[in-house]
Length: 108
Image 1 (cartoon, helix red, strand yellow):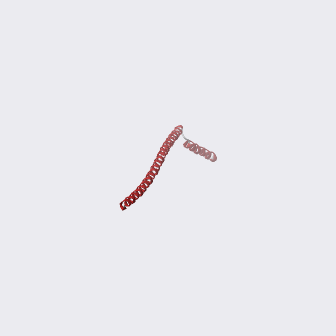
Image 2 (spheres, rainbow, N blue to C red):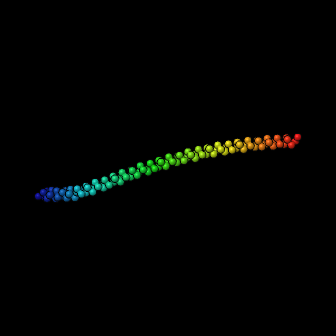
Image 3 (cartoon, one colour):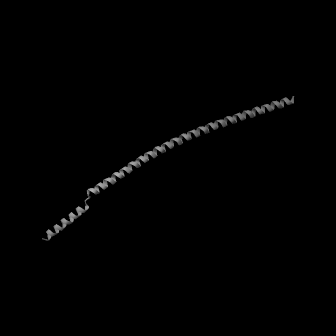
């Protein structure tokens, strides 16, 4: 008789645990809805990340183009400076030659 009571009490305890631990259809629907919302947020985050990467790539391209233009401008400026120095040197030589010629003409 004691074993029978123990068995009945054990069965009732097991049934109570099983009923209390089971999820209802509503619980499952709530979990599925949260999962869908999380997946939608993840998809949106991935799209936002792709857009940000595209914008960063475009900014990098523009920066590289600006660097190339600046380097070309610097190269042209250096070339103009070299030409100006050469012209100044030639002008100095011509001025010295003219001065020498003037000095020689004054000696006569």
